[in-house]
Length: 138
Image 1 (tube, one colour):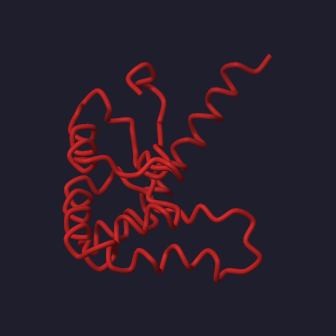
Image 2: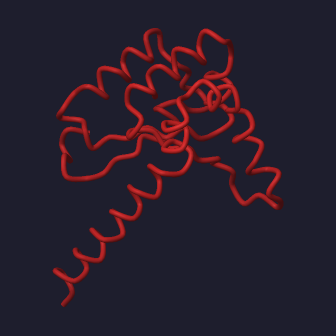
């Protein structure tokens, strides 16, 4: 991540995967990244039902994750990570799984995580890409 300080990086699934489970101290590890000024270009993606199941596993975990996100409301994005769903219900399944988290966040943070950060980051990315294209067009 540090090798590309000018790139906007979104770490999918907070670094978790089908076989990668939260490590002991995962939230502390994430806090360290969030407070490291050399990693201010790194964002965390809260998508996928497998991530949701860890986050909403208990009230204690929900509170701890919500506290982390409330401290860094501009660095998290929500996504469903549903692949080619045939109906909206599939998209909503993951969103609804996160309901305990949405309730534990401040209203402002919840809005940013669910919609605002995505719009801000991707709108800025579009401008950067267009500027790069203009500067590098042959």
